[in-house]
Length: 315
Image (tube, rainbow, N blue to C red; front, side, top):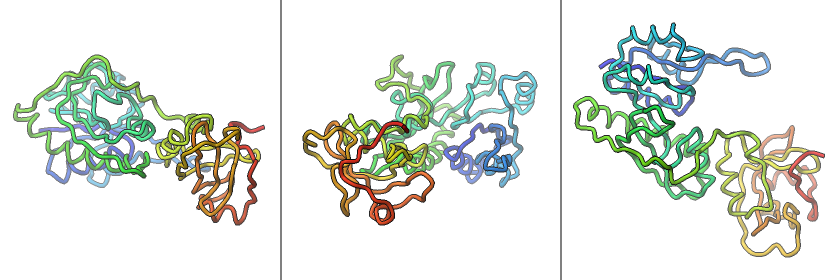
C-alpha cells in the first residue's frame, strides 16, 4: 500500500516515524514550505521534513495544495492512502477523493469534542480530565469526518499544553499503526459524528490569548498558564514590563477588598496576586529581557512589594 503523508509540526513527527518503523511504504511527504527564522532569517525546514529526509523519503512543499501543478504531481504518486497530521492547509475535495482508502486524519482530541486548530491547549485551559486522539476519515467539513478509532489520555494535575502535545503525538502514532490494518482489510467501523460539537471550536492560539485577566478566578487563570506553556505563554505587566508566568498555584479564599491584579503578599511561595475569586501565586516567572526563573530567585534580584498592581497593558 502506497502512503502519502501530510504533516508539518513536531506533533506529526512520531506518526511518520512509526509508519517507517512498521514497514509501511511512505512514498512521499507533503509539508509546508520552509520558513525564515532567527535574526538571520535563515530558512528552516519543518520538523516533518527533517524526519522525512532522515529516511530518504521524497518531500514536496507546495505553497497551496490546490494548485493544479501540485495536484498533478500528487495524482502521479498514486497514493492508496493519504495520512494527514496537523498539516496546516485545508485539504480540497479533489485530494480527499484521490486515494483508494481516503484521507485519514490524526486529530488530537476525542471527537466530536474540540474540533479546530488548538484542541490540545484548549483541553488544558478548560480543565478537562481527559483528552485523547481520534483517527478519522476526512470529509469536506472541518474535523467532521467519520471516526474510526480513539485512544483516551488522562490529564495530569500539572499538565501543560506542551506535555500533553508530546503525549498525544506518541498516542497518535501508536493508534495510527493499530488502525491502518482494519482500514486496509475492510473491518474498520466508521462512526458518523453529530453535527454539533459539545464544545466550542478550538480556534488557533494567539499571543493575546495569554494575557492574564485577574478579574477571573485563580482556578481559571492557573489552567490558562498551563495551557499556554510553552507557547505563547501567559503574561501580565509589572512596572510597565512584560512578565511571563510559567508556573503558578491557587490559594482559595477571599481577597477582601483588594482590586484584582493587586500583589497582596511576597514570600517564599511566590508572588500572591488577588483575583476575582481566590489568589494566584506566581511560582515561576520571566521578566522582559531576563531569563525564566523560579520566583524565589527572581525576587532576589528584583524588588517587588505588596500593593503593586499588575496591569493588562503597557502604559
